[in-house]
Image (cartoon, each protein chain N blue to C red):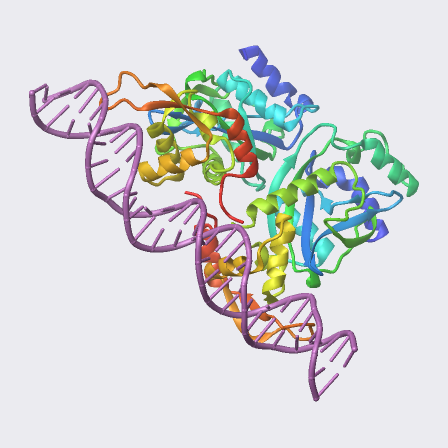
Length: 256
Length: 256
DNA sequence: TTACATTGCGTCACATTGACACAATGAAAT
DNA sequence: ATTTCATTGTGTCAATGTGACGCAATGTAA
């Protein structure tokens, strides 16, 4: 979006977007054995923010989320899951936005649509780190991956939204194709384990983990091994998509 | 809400409510060993609808849901859980409402706020059947419990919303105090089992169910037995609230 | 050539689960 | 009063799953 488009956006927003509603996305990636989140560094402010946006008046809400995802990552066909609505009246601070925009040389009336109350719909997304091309929006100076264990200060209630997304991801780990969406096509067992450990925030026994995950019958071991690594080279695995989806439909977890 | 209030509501709605957003509630109860849902029979139409409402401009979304719940059931302090947003542009059919209102002698302009697009936030609630005082709203002629296995035709996408709520309830069964909120204070083991069977839509072995549910240590067996029943009188149980909440925090289900 | 971190494979005790047996209870039928 | 029988309380047993380890194989780095 060029400068001119931004002006149009600010002026015409009230016309083209559904009022009162916004979208915020928590985009997870996995790299260097760490769980990452894609964040935007705001212009003229120290805070960061989640990628977000608004919904066109005739647009499906899920489609709007996909559009935002595409704009920030370059990716289509992303695993996307709506997880919570944040609807406290005081969640946004209109003065904050006014100040930030003013520093950027933009002054708007007090009753401008951007300053009104927004109820936001939280989505979390799972993407393959290496495919992403992080792209800032009009409110941000850059867009980059941040480690979930080393987060900067976030604007408004975005930290709360992020925490809730992480909590949801944890609960979904056994019922959704989390590994499949976060890892590259070929990966090693230690990588997969580290992913589970990071999301669950606990250590797992290497041998028991392998036994359990293999018992699901959703992995295929390849003939290759990982190359260019120190120590013993681990085997590479891929997800057996067919049986993975079947297993997830039936539900992987225990229970009744 | 009296007749006059209804007129006010229709006229002033655009002023007092947050635009574009609505709330729909799937209220579950348990009675006669059946899972029930509280539904409204619409005026001048054959369809039924879920209890719903709108959000005041300065009202917390969760509070709005509680308000709706209170209006339809008479209850405060209800277990309430937001589960999904339904945001397809074509989910509501403005002609449907127009027709229904016209039959009721009410004609509104085509651009009336009630006919605009609404994104709705779905909540499910768990209530104790016997405490509920079903109360219709202005769009409905009566309000009553319906068996989830014998549902009438619902307006718009309310059937889809209900199904999603049921699916969510199933997933939450081991992680939320479902039994605690749906059953009376004192209940029998067969009652609790029937509740689980109904929600999960499958039969469970009586003896294994008892063993497992008792192993959680969340139930207290009382000295009393159920009276006035045919055959052997079953013991009565209550939830041990303290250990129940503790167990739910840790998560009852298996997994990692 | 050796050291050593890491990987692949396996063992064992114990807990959990699914399937089922049997006696006890008490209202309803005779 | 006695019998019937659906229902409840308790327990058994084999199969399976889980947690805690041991040990040899691998292959880079010392």
